[in-house]
Image (cartoon, rainbow, N blue to C red):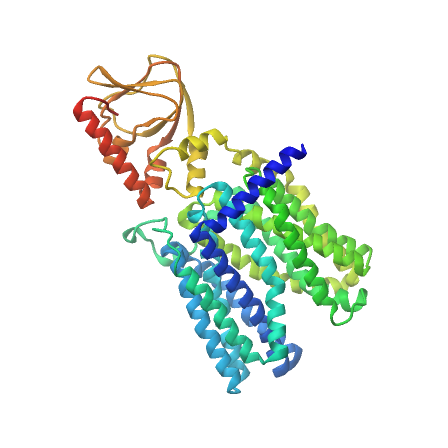
Length: 556
């Protein structure tokens, strides 16, 4: 058992290492590090600036300015990630944010009205809503395997955890040594760092409709909502994820109040407790490596929800500083499991052409529920006291996880793809260039059929409706009644009629009992024509086969 675990972790570590050997993934992850660190550092400096300008009410006002417009705009800003190349959307967001932060630094240095700085802060927050969905939707097109996609999500979550305490630490250090405007200027620098890295990413063409097929912008912008509403799996995952961020918003308030009123940790207490969450997130990154290569992630998502909620209940029942630090470290671990499993499940389940918009809806819900969670915490503290609020808030996620467990298990069962079928597709030249997410989607759509010896799969002159891969046995390719070639396991046929829109150029007959996997015409064409490298590979295969057909050596 331990040997199998060691082997699994070894494979996961190699895949995680491959993420940073993939030039495009490495640049995106390092760009994310610059972006998240800058956002946290600037948030600390902005809070200090607001407090000095108008006290606690000003800090609350800044929160409203940053989060409320972002929650409204996020689903529509995410449309950019489906209309344009996602790396260019990220680049534009970085450049605009860097310029805005530079203006904010100048405004503070020149003693401009606080309202001008707040307005710039709100603008930066709104622009940021285009960056994150585009980045999350970009990863599936950069990952070379499904395992690498999960590892990339682990890397992103780890960077998020590091940024959650490195960013505030950097902001606090710069504030102690310099001033607010210097922190703003440094944040502009982190956004420029991100822009320089993203500018070197080349993900190829984006999935989706060609320009002439675009619908009205309002209809397109709502596609993310429609996609989620029309799929029960997505409704469940997004709903549970939103419940987790609701609790996260409440925790932002509960940590401060508990540290000061219940745990007796003083003014430094909230910092200690938040650091425990960040450290737990780093531990969670190690645990999440075990998820790399796993098909069944919905159960891991449910386990992450339990690890988010139960520790809060423990703090409420046993309000001790040591218990709180350990419990919040467990919350950080659970947060990483939730992030990695939920994002990977969504990336697998959502069609590529609307992926950014779905993540835009998720971004909106995250921002909105964090705000609602803060409000909920205040109400619960008033009604139940701090300890009661901790118990009530923490109990929400375990209850929801228990109620949803059977549905999560069904998602896992539906997601379980036989590895052999995925490998069959990966070995086909036409499909080899496809992103991991697209390849997984095709593998999920394969239809298996057993063909007895002597039966025809299709006949010469028939219209083309499916693409076939031989999983077992053999298929004879016959032209005008003469066998020209025989295909075995791993071989494929049927692509010429689909891609050239012509009748079948040959008859495909089972030379022995055969097992076939097939894809419908629309699924095949959408996958192949959506990626230039795949089109080139298909053209090369078709050219070679038609040449053989003309020479009388083989056919399809």
